[in-house]
Length: 306
Image (cartoon, rainbow, N blue to C red):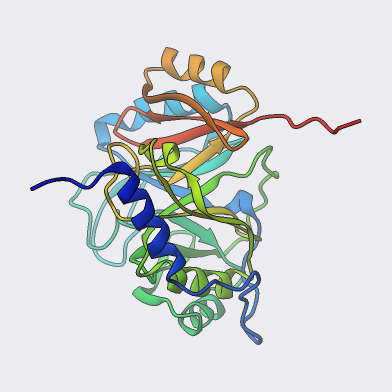
């Protein structure tokens, strides 16, 4: 069967995006409480094999700096399981690292991030009111309570609350939660998440450079969101994504991309996509020991005119 040309695919992507009603710049519903705490309390969930835990920790901290909490073995799911667990805190974002010694109970491992909330019960009610499904009801963990919610488009996210209020330093740069959704569900996701997070759309375009998703000859729809939870970029595609695009869940902003990639390579990190520059940022895709894929990018400095 004859494959459509890149130009036709590009036009199709634009047409799909154009056929969906625009989302309000601020979609927070009146009466929904603000439950976000701050971006430094939001972590990317990373699952690796137990044998890869120490290698991942060493490579991640060598790349970004920071430190790890003490590793513990705990049950972090509502059903019986056992995993090593530790928190990696870096100037550019936090990772909750799990090395399960038992099979991972469903649906854990599919949640991309953990967001700290000020009140877990209020947060669950707000998520439901905003259109999310609660796929794992609230359950206790060793230091608080958790739940897993699913946003329109199949995006799983863990909400958590600590018995003892944590106190973490602010980040130097706020990471981007990178969310890939279909054109069919993009606006439903945006309405739902914006309502819950009290977020705002920082930028939106239907002609973002396809190089950002591995399709250099085309364009696609990209929406950037900012909220008290941090940053998010929503990438609306038809799912025809070359590896590793779509596998990354987080983009980490650094001051010097070349220097960071040099540290990463020296620490055993593979560079899957060499640096490319579009729309004021230079980015690369990397894979850490254990299989975790991430974007690393640096923003170009814009100088004011005369």
